Length: 249
Image (tube, rainbow, N blue to C red; front, side, top):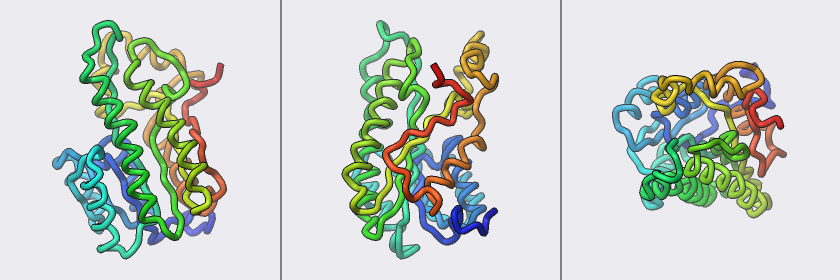
């Protein structure tokens, strides 16, 4: 229930990185519907404007998660508008899938830079503003744990992200800042639709998920709400797999 104090997000202020993406926009809509105040940022202006139109009281800013100065400006602008920040959700990311022997080195570096370094920079800048404590949630992946062929860059970035979450959680727990990640199975979003349209790719992705379907953005929302709300206040350093059984071995 929206008025359940364990899951109440009314008037809490959250930054969403990658807010214009398939997952970022779904998270923004969900938190907006539950009365949260939002600071949305994305590198893609058109996608950012589309999601901000659905959350009319949100602050929308074009920014790159790899730029620490830009991230600090996002946080400061959010504090100027809403007087506080209560947490950050990181839904920014790249998903290169290509054979390791022929992969472009620059693609590998870009993936690490966005998925890992960007996550570190956002976490650090957000934590600076969370003097009263708060919540940081990243989107990891089942690829934080499982090994799929052709996922060298993506899986490396997401495995490292899960360990980064553990380290930051340990370091910032005395400040009452929780740091967690959610590891979904393959989700049909604009980022994955090109791969899922390839012959056999969708069938292979579904075949390794015991529940027999791809994840949907709505599958993640309960866990997102838990980790941001009072009910999740003693959870930290975890990658919670919302994956239909994909990581069961």
